[in-house]
Image 1: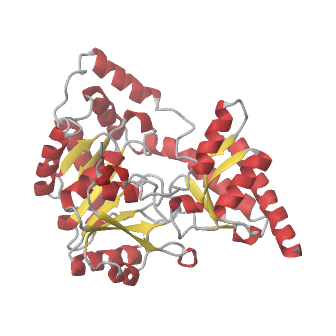
Image 2: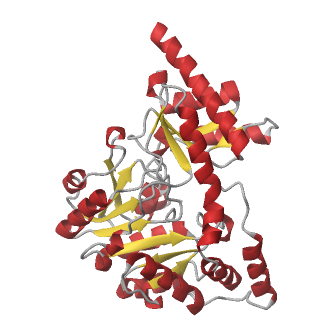
Image 3: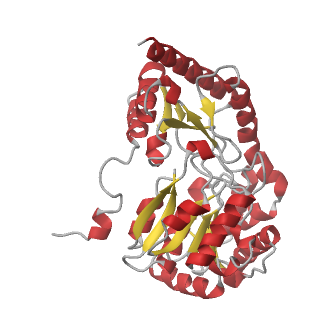
Length: 395
């Protein structure tokens, strides 16, 4: 029986660059001790007070079908949060609660892309981006940024790629690079979106993890609230990755249609999860800072360790829970380096090539193990890279 092209072409064919990750997981299942610095999963679990709120809600009977758009309480809470952060008037009618940020990304693209339309995204990219665009029936078109530009996208690049496009997907603070887009960058992006009549889909799931600079939502910029869909999530800000609770914020007309889409797909998010999310968002800045604090510490550790050598350079680590390391001086591709590191030292990192062509010759390190083990692993990575570089220079 024939399957649809939409489903069989979701990943675009070929390797997705995640072979190192899968190999590390197989080695762990076989009993090997592996230091995993691969995916963005907190090394702390969901805060006990959030779990208490979840448990109380469930035990009080909030375990049946939830209203599809999300509870009024959570939609109002998200709306107030977004309004406070952007200065743009926001009500529950601008909010759809979704089963995680990934569901929100898919819904946003379904809302603005017809089959055959072009959806733009920036390279390096989070692994699901091109497949999400293809899943919505659109053609995924990458725009390469450069390490020499600190992976800040430039308006000219976006404009040059915009023929036939209807949307642009961005992510700041950025996974995988850790870069926070500057106001200059975002103003340039906004200008192209207005001139080219593009929808902007802004993935802001790391907005509580900013170490340098400031997080600016493009929704705040002139003429952008009416053409921007903001994707948010409880996963990174509140260590609720498994709870699957996110949202789309956008113009009321878009949200009305997305509620209809959710009725025919996800059919809502469990009520006890939503109550826990409402509790967590209302717990305030201190809880968010407690969850972000380990990554802030480890970033400082990393900067100090990397300053002691000159083989690996660090892409500006301004936000998120990742470091993007430039290992080109070691004479290997990112994939070759990551495989050799896993074989030699049982340390698993993600090749830059896993996230597109622009990060070739880099590896992404997740700051997701305890401070002492993280520091030891990073020192080993530096020593390994230095040894490779010396051998490469001697050839």
